[in-house]
Image (cartoon, rainbow over all chains, first blue to last red; front, top):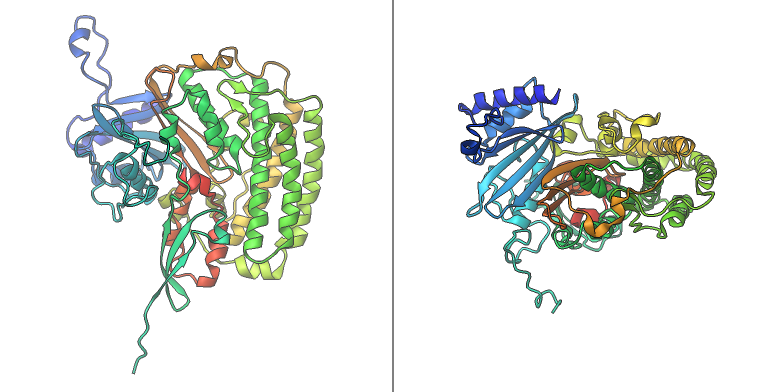
Length: 177
Length: 369
């Protein structure tokens, strides 16, 4: 069932964006495997649940609203927003549910490390309000369109974003040295 | 001639008895009506997610105890289950049953703390004493099996740390009977009380739309008519083997939240009874799980969730194949639920502030992580 759902999602997302942003792993072809090694599939099942990977340029509010309002998908519940710092790029992961049919979807949005920025979905799912602020606070990813983007856990005058992999802990300032 | 009026900004906290922790609420009032509310948090931030990246997988378990310290067993469990999913390990059945029993005992303890302190907040002193009397029944049992009363550090990746001491399961069965009797008393003590009802019925209403929009889960969602419970929606551990109901109410007010929590106590007791009947003999941890230095999940990512007493608790674990996590994201229900205050308090009377705020049942250790 998850595979069918994923197919529907891929079809609808590609249609909304207007180009083929999502695709499955190319069929195993021995001659071509070496050439195609670089290509990463952008739609897959992660432990049995659909996961799509998008570039921050393709992720926008129209797409988010489509995921929420489409009668087949209806992802009306945004449960969790995760920010991750990979050394080459950053990612924001949205966990979406359909609260009636209990569907799941992970949306991964990739953004470059320098000037990391992902459009805020706070106007689509209110629950993104605090979770995006938390990611901004700890990872320094900008969320344009957020109504109140400021630090939430650390104090306002804190320098740097601790969950970035290149963050240097100032042990002296923390009284650890 | 009109009288010139202006709004007043009122600062509640960070040290305020009703927060049961350090939490600040900036409220703007026009006369007695709240026009704006801004929660300010972070006073208890310990950087749990940052710390996780520095420890071995097992070493982080005690830190999860300190998120929602009222419901530490579920925190333990959800973290371990995320790592188990990455490792694709099977957990021995006896361990799963022990996990369910301790998690449900802990849920009862957590709801009782809420029940006692909430009534204390709105001016009833004696329920607190009843709640803590009964909570101690649960904590004694948990103490016996884990060696701690609140920060248990009991669940391990691949199982649990200790087997049940001799006769423990029978003692749990006896205590369930005692608890059921005692909880019946609560209704006669508080639920029917006229003052209590007039302070809670129709106060702080949340609609279904608000619940979905703000990502609210747990008893708050169920009190607004949404039948959402991870134990039923996506059964984890061995929850699919028990017969229990999900109490829901349609009203969405403070009283409905109160009733849902009271009803949940009975359901938890039901689950414990069934688990005590069904529990098999056998191992309590997988062989591999005992070699904690060797736990190295393959590169990948997994999200697991569980039903904590406050709502959906989740862990997004990302591994890069080393013996320390690459990233642990903790989805803390209190942190998500507390955001609703910005919306919920507007238009309410200032006298209802504590009654509404208390009904959310947030724990600051979890809000601030």
